[in-house]
Image: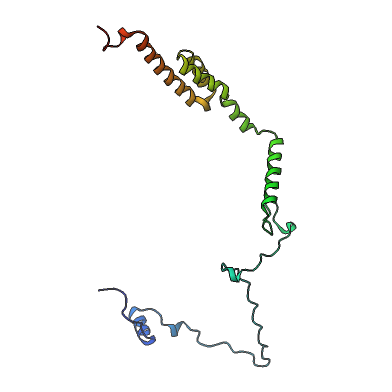
Length: 183
């Protein structure tokens, strides 16, 4: 059977349950004597507070956002534009930011990453040597593996390609190494 009651209890039933459980009833919690009010001067009726403007998500009830001046924005925060910019304005702002970023000095963290990457010409040379003959790729791969930590995956691929090229080249050039043709 469910522990939830089947119907709402009346005030008398609630008072009876409170007495059975030993809880103070609501009547004993009320103050014994209500404070006397001064009847000499009646208070004027209070005006109703003005309804707050609620921003609705419904398109028909939307109101334009209040204009915020840049002086009232907190310091250090980006200002939210009061109106939507056109595509032409957005493109102009993006170009301006890109030009500012290009003219700015390279941060030390980025400079360190650039030094840790192998130059694309060095990587291309290593792959060409790996596919071309195999053995010439080993010194290039060794240099990349030791000096350029963010390009080590290229060094590993160069070594794997070079090993396969050398192995298949040896089987092609020396048929007596192949047990199928050795007779």
